[in-house]
Image (spheres, rainbow, N blue to C red):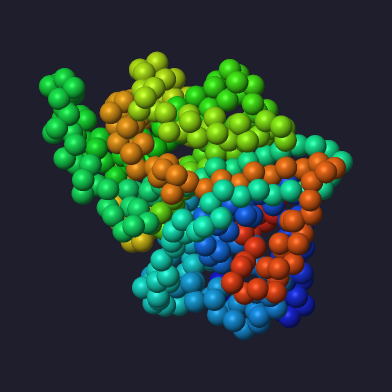
Length: 387
């Protein structure tokens, strides 16, 4: 951890790997479509992109080493362990792996970053299309927009807990016996994570039954939320697979479902099904060590001050306590108006144009346009802008 080996030839191989990721974008209809959507929505923020050839060329081994090692500071270290072990074994391992790490400070520097912003309604970029020449005719689409993060912070800088705490006292539909329990839920650090999760399940179910089963406009459709822990923003995305002749109608139908929760209100049966689905998923995954590590993540970290042990202990209770009114509190925080919603439709076929490759060639020579696809290493294998 303190004496890492940095080799020039390994650095060159890594750059070539990321170069191949970038240049494989035009070969995938889904990645090409996600590329344009994320570029428009996050204004080409390079922290959410596969690096372009131009960006890779500007990297040096020393600059990369400094960027990585500056984050390895002991006052920003969180250690979580899950498994079958004895205290003696763990103490021995901690001594072997962490006992000789020298104390270093740098937490505040590691937490500093420029704000991440959604584009302010860029003309001509909110609703785009991608054409890919291929012998196989098919289509896909993504619809996305801003959402708060897991802890109720928005990209505008708002803390939603400052306003949501007063809602329960004004909610006359609650029975007196449930009021205290409801107030506890709405003041709990996990309120937005729980309510957003249930909302996602309900929207998913409606999309599937309406757009796929009733209207027959898509092979598959899904709604997902990307809620960050430390970044003060999130986003939702609807993923659609369809045919070239139906994809535009499918996108319109998805927007109608997304915006239709007020005119077609959620009913108890939908909430019960969503609750049951998430509780069953939790019960199944709790047998996994990896899932436990995910639950424990950031529990000790000062960068996520709201997370405490109650976020693990009260998880099941929060799902069971949530009401339809809570779901609508979360729904109001999704930006679904025409000025906030972004979409991109991808169409592949023998008659399609070749604008994907052409647009990438432009971006390779233009510093202001960076190739945008799902973030994270290895994301070339991911086709949805949610990971």
